[in-house]
Amino acid sequence: MLLQSLFKNNKSNMDLQHAKMLDGSYPAFSQFGSDIYVSDIVQTCIDIIATECSKLQPKHIFTNSQNIQQIPKSSLNRLFKFAPNELMTTSEFIEKIIWLLLMNENVFIYPTYDTYMDTMGNKQTYYTGFYPLNPSSVDFLQDPSGAMFVKFYFRGGDSYTLSYSEVIHIRKKFSVNDVMGGGFNGQPDNSALLKVLQINDTVLQGIGKAVKSTLTMRGILKINTMMDNPGQVAERKKLEDAIESGTNGIVPLDLKGDYIPLTVDPKLIDKDTMQFLQNKPLNWYHISMAILSGDYTDEQYQAFYEQALEPILIRLGQAFSKCLFSQRELDVGNEIIFYQKDMMYLSTKSKLDLLNITGAQGLLTDDQKLAVLGYPPLMDGSGGRRTISLNYVDTNIATQYQLKASEKNIQNGG
Image (cartoon, rainbow, N blue to C red; front, side, top):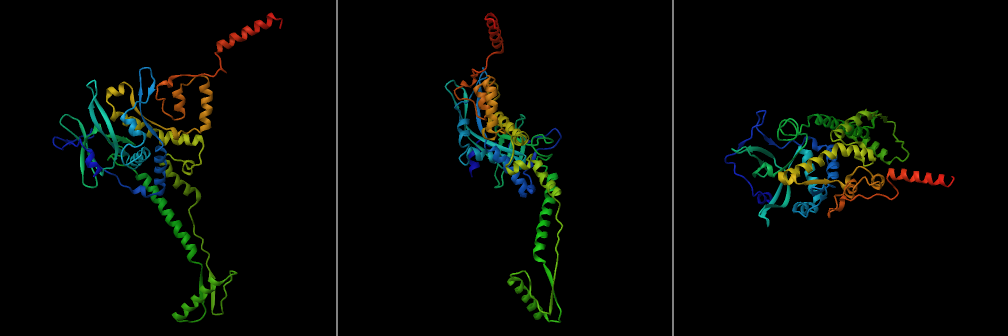
């Protein structure tokens, strides 16, 4: 429905053929199985990373020849500020693409745009939206000139063929496959993790059955007389009533019956083994127990940021920049940066201590100070200014001052 109105550049399959990879294979990929995603631990891990990334603030940045960064009033910044499309806010948009990336090891984003001629006669691009795609399968195709195209198949039966250069493609675990992240077939290779999750599920089911057994089997009622079935039922009912009505924990019985209690002692798995099984999926996503619980130190968040978040930030910025700007626009200083204002690993106190030391000595520009706090540069381009505290002086000046003070002291007979 919505996608049908978006794909204006849909190319006919005429004169297109499957692109052939260097290993002789043909890049046709189906979307991946979701076996591991039924695990609550896996979903929690992905949710933690996606939620953290949803705090990012994407910006179109221009760096001029004097190395001064500016934020232009572009269509990209207009979209990034609040809503990349009519269905999502910026935070929701980022969260969705991170979920798709971590689930599929690949995510495709389709930018919509209009073109126009400026007053200088140059062709300009005005971007109107960004849409995360969730195809069921994709084919990579080539035309006779060697240009690459990607054909998306969706679960509703629709398919669209687009120029690969006009699609933002972000990959994770980009290794043995030439064009897709994941394993050799362009799908997540979760076999190692799946084994651990299956064991974990077996353990959890075993614990549930063990707990249930302790609550059901409490004892045996031995009836000392020969009874028919109605009599046994009545005797058992009398015992149950006695148990329910007993206030002191003692069950009254007559001479016809004996109650033999059973001691149920189910053997549960030890703590270390349970911890090992739980840590396996956490390690898979580079998440510690401290991050999982939300009770972490600066150092623990720094490790999480550098291992799990920072590589995603870098790939987002590079993939968006590569697709949205021509080579000439990249050369003159245009790029997309995902600023992490609200996800820096240092606490506010640690950041302020850092700024007090380095900033007071004039080591940082205003824009660099803002970067420490995770903010983009000043929009008016004045962020290249350096300020210094008057409490600090040049070492040479300090030496001269001390020598003059010493000479004055000698002259005064000191």
